[in-house]
Amino acid sequence: MTGNLYIVAAPSGAGKTTLVRLLLEQEPAVELSISYTTRAPRPGEQHGRAYHFVDVATFRAMIERRDFLEWAEVHGNFYGTSRSWLADRLAAGADVLLEIDWQGAQQVRAAFPQAIGIFILPPSLAELARRLNERGTDSSEVVARRLAAAEAEMRHVGEFGYVIINDRLAEALDDLRAVVRASNLTLAAQRGRHADFFARLI
Image (cartoon, rainbow, N blue to C red):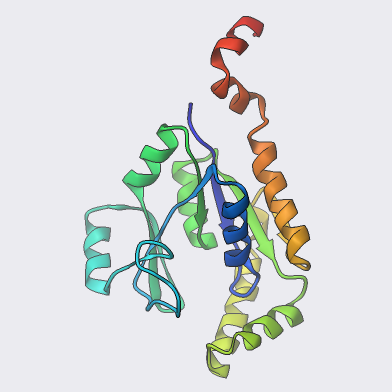
C-alpha cells in the first residue's frame, strides 16, 4: 500500500506553518517531510526538526547529485525535498506532508500526480499585510517584498485541489484535518489498508 502525499502551500503570512504544526499534533499518522534550506535558522528552530540547514555550496552539490525531488529559490534562499526519503516513506505506506511553495508543488506533482494539493489563503491582502508587519522580524522593505510575492503566489491557487481560507485558526485547522481524514476514506485507501477483506467483496 502506498501512503498519501499532501502538498501544503501558501503565501508567507497565511498561517501555513502554524496550521501544519497543529495538524501534526492532532494527526500523528501524518509525517512531515523536513526540507533542506540555505536560509539562517529563526529563533527556536533546530537543525533536523524545522529544516536541515546547509550552506549554499552543500545545497548546490546536492542539486548536482539529483538528491532533490524538487527545489526552488525563494526570497533569496534555496529549499529542497529529499527524493529518496520521500519515496521510501510513501512505499512503506506512510502519509507524508510537504510544506512547500507553488514552484515545488509543480515539480512534486510531475513525479507524484496522485499528490493531494492544499492551498492556504489569508482572508484578505490587508490582513496578510497586518500579519507580516506584526511578526516584527523583517524590515519594512522585506515586508513589502513579501507582500508583492504573496500576490503572485496566490495566482497559482487554481493548481490545487483544496483551498482553505485561514480567517479563524480553529476553523482552518478543522478544514485541514477534514481533507486528511477524507483522503484516508477513499475506496483506494481503504482497499490498501484492508486488502484481505476487500478481496472478498470486490
